[in-house]
Image (cartoon, rainbow, N blue to C red; front, side, top):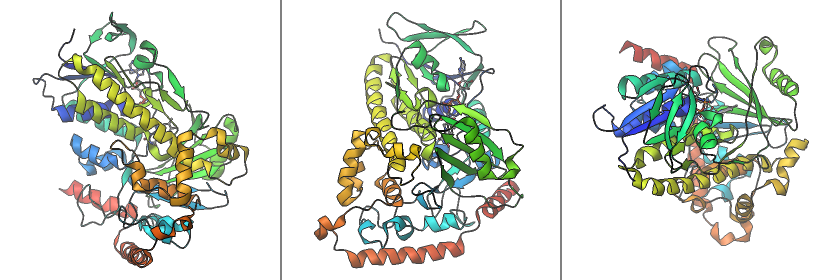
Length: 508
Ligand SMILES: Cc1cc2nc3c(=O)[nH]c(=O)nc-3n(C[C@H](O)[C@H](O)[C@H](O)COP(=O)(O)OP(=O)(O)OC[C@H]3O[C@@H](n4cnc5c(N)ncnc54)[C@H](O)[C@@H]3O)c2cc1C
């Protein structure tokens, strides 16, 4: 029997829980009277994962939509601009590097510059200015530009704990989300297999029309109570462990990197994220190829002796996702739905996308729930496979000799869909038409930057008649050189910009 959807209960108060609450509440403008009630239940005993400091450019729109000031987020979360990723030692392991910047190549969508660049490894430099902006440590915008604007596309590096606090405060104070502190002890099912209510350890029982499972790796509602199986991606992506620490800067005035630095190691990679008050640094690795002690030694070698007294925190994880993310009246968001290693910071982006889907599709009554369930499950299955393929692309073209890297090149570890893509890209590279689904996560540009950065050169000579725009391409490449010089002379250093900008904000 169908009934009106009037109450949503979100279980879990990590980034996924509070971000979902904010996105749904902002869209539905819950004012306590208009019918939709949003309750978030969080445990004071079970900690959040406490990592997840790199975001995707989608976060700019998300923060605006939920009504947060960018400068407030920067000040409270010690944030920095993230203009892309720098991948060091992923090809040979001898100091090689390439960028995956967030700004698309010049001429994108009109002309593909790849057939015309001098060296395919330099594709990001020749087609786009952001590589040089990052290398020079410059902010993506000048003092004259407004919040959320910029000459280069960007996302953020944020202190994960502070970010959840900012979201929580905003949800409670401005978006009418009700917070309940309590640990869920039992999930009660109704006769039709849907979730009827949850019981807290305090014995309080809470019912709802829709439950959002944001309980992290526990996947308490979807995975445990509704028994939705987990599909592992460990045959494709081998990492299952991470150690992390907070590293102080040498000096208060030390430069802040404006990109995530991902440095390849013998059996994994190290992330290095610059916030204004510290760096967040961690080593992701495969326990099959590296012990925890070896990983810690790698991390300390990377950071130098100043890290010796700083304790590391170990986090184990399983790469993969639930077979379905929506079942009956329960949808999982964040790590309760799945997680595939932190490369390219896809997790919080998926939270944003999932929460937006929920906000856009909350039906007036439960009779429509099966349609929404089916649609969201189809979309998310596609997205998981795309993410897994995209992350695998970073590994499979390596020339590094260590067993971990060589195993990544083994054909048996490469999904068929990625093999198909590679077969086409061998003669023409990735093109926008390969990624024209409305629910696509990464544009062709992202694949181009990674593929070419790893040294993959399509054989454009097999269809030479397609590539006779030499003069036009050279004009764009020249224009990129001019723009690069212009930006190098006008954009301020990253730390200096943030400090000056925030000081002008606090004076207002
Ligand atoms: C090593 C590592 C690095 C990462 N780096 C990035 C990155 O750079 N970028 C990115 O986008 N993502 C990253 N992620 C993922 C990111 O951290 C998460 O997607 C994000 O923090 C959201 O987590 P969550 O809210 O789903 O889970 P959690 O933070 O684990 O929160 C779970 C919540 O559920 C609550 N809970 C659990 N059980 C119960 C219960 N029984 N009753 C009541 N409440 C309960 C807990 O108290 C907690 O509030 C990383 C993950 C890892 C492991």
